[in-house]
Length: 261
Image (cartoon, rainbow, N blue to C red; front, top):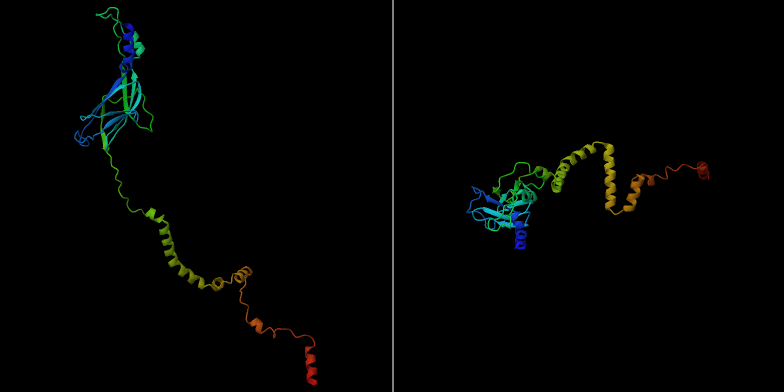
């Protein structure tokens, strides 16, 4: 008989040493029992366990062992605050069993009465993934939990207004602005350069070289640009070459002798 009792105690010990987490959805103007979506549930540790929320807004998570759990309400269309629940024994099981008196069973004096069950502390706090959780010695939220909807889910993104900074960063706008500046600045720059004779001459030479490039005379234009001279030879050099040639010695005397003959 005693081995059977020990076996039953061993089988039911996990449920005895576990607690039940319960809670209630707080209804209001944002969420009412009639608008509670079908399929609303509470997730434990990101889907390890899921418990459905009843039509009255209550829920119960049975047989929760000692440890830390993330409790997250999943209500379609609504946003809720997740919670971090820490379950720790207020009295260790071994100490509770040792300190509990074993009074004899009135029905069977040979069987001692079951020892006192250990009690647990349930600490509840808001869960923020990017923050370190508070210690269990801090103030806890009440249990059973009160789940308050924060807001409705809204995936609509309003259209942004006109952004001048974004427009100025556009390549097309920059090209248009540059063209407009050159349209007004280039005539004034050309007029200022025309008033300077040296600058006007340099512009004329550059224009002539560009015309040569357009005439497909690349070799001659390139050589003239490297030499720094114009490719058109002076016309007066060919016509006056004979008159500029110096007279040879004795040329005048020979001419006189020919005339005397």
